[in-house]
Length: 373
Ligand SMILES: *Cc1c(COP(=O)(O)O)cnc(C)c1O
Image 1 (tube, rainbow, N blue to C red):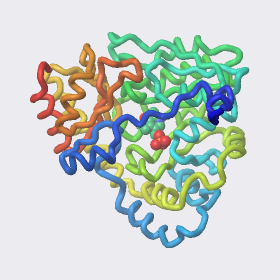
Image 2 (cartoon, rainbow, N blue to C red):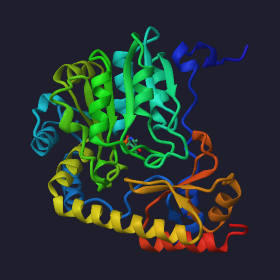
Image 3 (cartoon, rainbow, N blue to C red):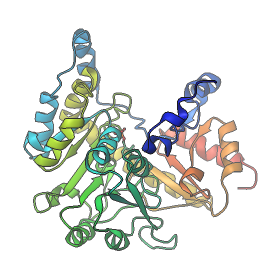
């Protein structure tokens, strides 16, 4: 008999599939060289603060040591930035790790977990990995004026059951780019029992410039069940270093600390994130570039008859109104990598990250050259 561990996997793992990384980017970089426009992963093309890079260089001197298992210096910097005590912060190897850990710590087969259709892809995976029951709430309709395909907070609140332990929200959301305001979240929280943990994933918060949306952090004091997720992967441009964090009630943090691997955030990531947080001018530069470049790209796409959903992020979701596979292939042949959305059930859309002006221009040129668009 041949050995096959597949059938030995536990029930939760049996229901999972391995992450599909999509394009093989290292191979594509070899093929296209400098001609590649990587617009598929919402990375920040301006790169991290030079202060972060310098701090990471210095931290290399201690790379033979284990990292600080408490992440004390980074937590202290985050505590100052957000005006909270360090006991409200838990650090993750990317926020992805914490989103997974949350379900593992708080939900199992006896519980349900609620999230939106077209919400962040990690939410159903975290639910399945914990063996919990998923409740996927239909998104707002495509014709919705403010948030097409966005979170329907009233329907999400109504979907919460007595066995619900967690609600995952993303604001702004990936892949739609849509958002809800502080007032809507306040209303939502008033409808959800305190025994339900409400996660607001704010991975793109630093890019927000819309009136009426600040951060769920402003509502945390009145809502101990509220958990705010942030990351250094997007505006801080440290995606490769892997650092994210939750700000939550101290009791939530204490439970997560039981499951957290002691050295989950590495030495370079700790040093880089702390220094990045201190460089407000770089963050302002990133924010200003993203706002103006996003507006420019949306206008250029509109001139070509292509409609973007409203976005408060560093990407746009283009609604083609028909299957995008052929166009995606044509862009690909010109070295323009975008994110196809078939896996999300949005096969008529393409998610395009805001790149450098040269990359965005390459995208537009490739669109102009594409047959039938
Ligand atoms: C990119 C992204 C993250 C970041 O994940 P990390 O693990 O911190 O890199 C989290 N949530 C959403 C919605 C994202 O799009």
